View: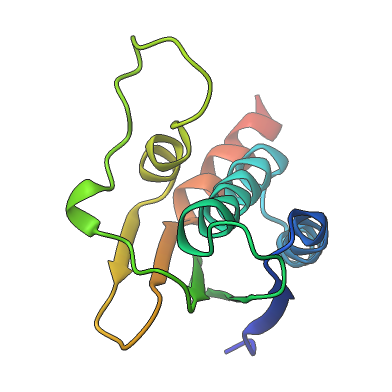
Length: 147
C-alpha cells in the first residue's frame, strides 16, 4: 500500500491551486490518464470551493484537510472541514436545464465519482469521501492508445 498524501490548507481560495498541483503530481505518478485526472482534480476543487462558500462562509483562515489515496486501482479522497455542517438532504445538483451560473459542482462530483458520501456525525464540520474506481479508466486509456 502506498501511504496516503495528507494536505491541510487555509480556507482561502488562493490555496486551491496548491491542492490541484499536489493532486496532479499524485495522479501523474500513478499514470492516471490525463482526461480522468482533469475530472478528478475538478471534483476536488469544487468540493473545496463549496467548503469555503457554504461551510466557512467567508473566513480565509479555517482548515481544509484533504487526504488522497490510490490503492488497488481506486482513487479515494477525503476532505474534512470544521465549519457549519451541511444538511445532506439539501445537497442536490440543480436542474441542468436551469441556465445560470453556479450549482453544478455536486452534479459534476456525482457524475464523475463512483461513490460520494458526506459524514456529519461529529461535533463540527463535514467529512466528504469520494471514490473513483480507476481500473476501467486505465483499460480505456490503453485501448485508446492501441486504436
